[in-house]
Amino acid sequence: MGLDFSILPKYMDVLLLGCLWTIGITVAAALLSFFVGIFFAVIALYAPWLIKQPFRLIEWVFMGTPLLLQLFLIYFGLVQIGIDLPAFVAGVIGLGLHFAVYNSELIQTAILAVDKGQMEAARTLGLSRGQALRKVVIPQAVRDVIPPIGNNMIALLKDSALVSVIGVSELTLSAQRMIGKTYRPFEFYLAAAALYYIINLSMEWVQRKIERRIAISR
Amino acid sequence: MDFELMQKVYPFFLEAAWVTILLSVLTAILGLTLGALGTFARLSRFVVLRAIGAAYVSVFRGTPALIQLFILYFGGPQIGIQLDAFQAGVIGLGINAGAYMTETIRGAIISIDKGQTEAARTLGLSRWQTMYKVILPQSLRLMVRPLGVNINALIKATALVAAISVVELTYTAQRYIGSTYKPFEMFLLAGVLYMIIIYVAGRGVTWLDRKVQIT
Image (cartoon, rainbow over all chains, first blue to last red):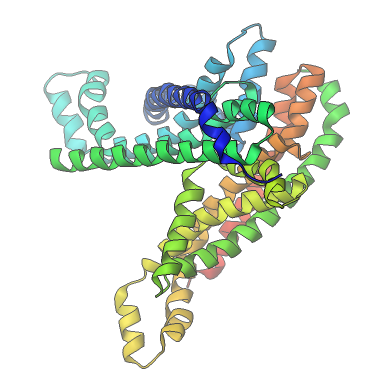
């Protein structure tokens, strides 16, 4: 069986719809991973020893096992304890938590890199420790951490292909469905790869723009 | 926790862990080879080779590894490449890892001070001699740790071949989750084995890193 790319245009709308889902799941998981990442970072730096421990365990497990396995655990595990989530939500939670752990590492470093004088000045002005963190230290840390987190988010886009395995109809699964109809895996997977590549390049472009703006604001 | 069930199925997980280890080792060997070749291309004097190297890195780092695997395994037969799932897994993951390793190795080489090259060339060494006797020995020290990070990622990436039905750890966990409805127990079995593999690999990298440093 040779190659025949002429069948692609007919199914392009399905692939583009898949793209939208891929972008949707990437954005949702990115936001989740960002805020949970900040939360994890604050716990790791400032919480009492006993509270830190379960979070260290989470971090250790999420960094030491494959994402695909984690997705299976979250999708099927939640069902077992009686929470029947749609695959999309399970996918967002899985991707979000996985990358939150990686973001947390970056955010911790950034928080520690914020000048100590900032916290001292804020405390002198009468802000509580929590307020000083929330209003003074973390906003500055977040600014510094946006470029490296951008790299994580590009990795997240590529890993979002994994949620096809638990049945989210994003780009990869859309391609698979069309292959089921047409028996043309090479053409459709290549088309999907091209679309991922385009989204990826756009993300890199946005990342460069943001980096330039941050460089100016400093 | 159903420990009785875990005791009953763990031999199958152990067997699957060996497949994961074999996959990881073969993928790492292929990845390192392609990483060295990719670096050679990217640092070449010839613009065509440089362009090929850059395209390799950009495309394979810019698309999901899962899709690359699918193109090779399901699409391969259409262009005359017939591979079984294990072979496709090793080759697909190896090519993917090679793209990341190219960047790691290249990064270590170009971070060596330019003065080193200039001094070596002034002393009459050829371009090749400069690379082999001056630059490479120094950059080797810088690349062990970041390559270790690549290998850590690669071990976890071997889970992807579960999607093309290679019976490794993740596939085994998935199958037993499906037949027993005990996701936590199966995750625990597979997860602990993954962590042991990654821990041992990490220790190996640390050992090697210490070996190549000057004391």
